[in-house]
Amino acid sequence: MRYLTAQCPLASHVTLFNTQWAFPLLIELTQSPATFSQLKQALCPITNKTLSHSIHKAIHASCVHKQEKTYTISPEGIKTITTLKQLIVPSPTCVQCLGRNFCAHPGNRES
Image (cartoon, rainbow, N blue to C red; front, side, top):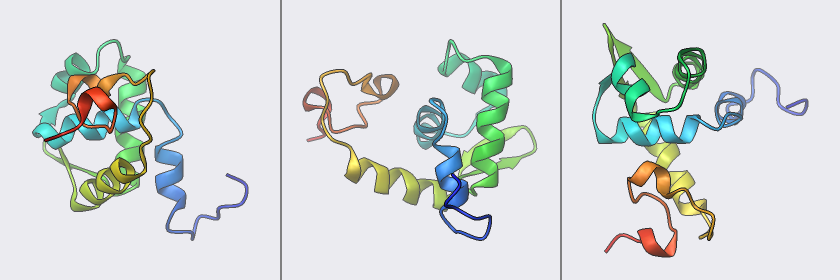
């Protein structure tokens, strides 16, 4: 991170994906808007602290919006997920994106 400055438009995205839960969080929100407790249940075994931190980073990166108690993926979040999906290389150790069949793993390719 020492090469990215706060003014760099990529800085917030790079720091967002510096955690293991950012990608699963965005994938979950592509399915439907969710409350904190719904996200916690869907992303089990994530802790409250880690989920809160991941949501905060995603909001800071403009990938997630919060309206009252519901979180939704933003247009920027959709663009980020779409871009990352194009970069994914199939891997035999794929965790299958929480069962959402999102990635390019041979067993997950969309028809």
